[in-house]
Image (cartoon, rainbow, N blue to C red; front, side, top):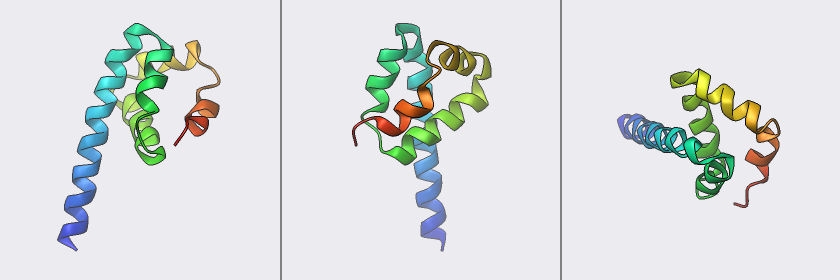
Length: 79
């Protein structure tokens, strides 16, 4: 049981790190964000977006405004 919790914590810490990278990449535009997200699994992408919205809601709002179709491309990025 502890192993599962440690794996989950480790996964979430990695996702938080990825979210910080996405926040930094937003300075370079939506395509830069999409490019980075394309390297992640679907679960990681969605975790990143949840964390992004939690820690930087104004910047997340900027992304949503700049890419209103973001939900579609989140699911459509090649896996």
